[in-house]
Image 1: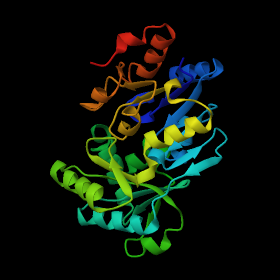
Image 2 (image 1 turned 180 degrees about the horizontal axis):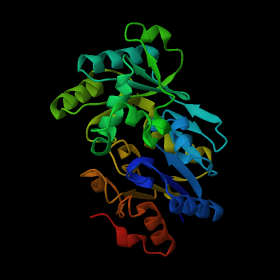
Image 3 (image 1 turned 30 degrees about the horizontal axis):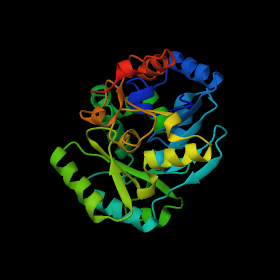
Length: 296
C-alpha cells in the first residue's frame, strides 16, 4: 500500500499558469487527512512555494530548489546540499560565457546578476506566450511577477561574488537557442565537477550540487521518516524530475503533458496537469485500478 505521495509542482500539480487551484488544495488536504504523507518536490525555493500557496499551509514536507534543501511543514530546515561558492563562480562564469543570465536561488532569497531588466527577460522566457508582448510595467504589476520575483535582489555584475553572502542551492538560466543551450549543458555536465544539470523546460538549464538531485534527496527523506521506497508514489513532468522518476519507487508516474520520452522510464502515465492528473492517478490507485495507467 502506498503511504507517501511525492509530486513536482510546475507542470504536474500546478495548472499551466503555475497556480494551485482550490480543487487540488482540497484533494491534498483530503489525502493528508486519510493518512498519506505528502511531499512537494520542486525547483522553486521555499519562499516561492509559500508565496504561491497564499494562506494555505498543508501539513507536508518540502524538497525545494530541486533537492538543495528540505523543510518540514513548519518551515524548519531538515538538511541541505549547497553548491560550493567556488563552483558557483565557475558556473556563473560559464553561463556568462555562453551569453546566459544566471539566477541564483539561496535560502529564502533569489539573486539576479547585472541589470534589473534581467528579471523582466526571465519571466518573458518562462511564459513567452503570455508575457512576451507585455510592457515592463505590465509585467511588474502581474500576479506572476509579484508571486515569484518581487523579492529578487540584483547583484552588481562586477562585484556579485563578493556581495553574495548566502549559500546557493541552485543556479538556473534560460536560452532560446537550442544549439547554444546544448553546448552549455555539455560543458556543465562534463567539465565542472561537483554539480549536475537538469531541465524543467525545453529552453532552460538548472544546476545543483551533485548530491542535490530530487530522487536522491527524496529517498533520503522518506527513509528518515521511516518509509520504504515501495510505499512511495512519485509524479513529475520534466527532466529535472528524471532522477526520482527513474528510481525504483513503488509507483513512478509521468504526466500526460510530460516532456517527450519521459514516460519511457516511468511505470505509469496519467492525464495532464490541467486535467488534475495527480488526483486522477491517486484515485485510480485507491480504486485498485492503477494498472490501467501502465506506461507503454
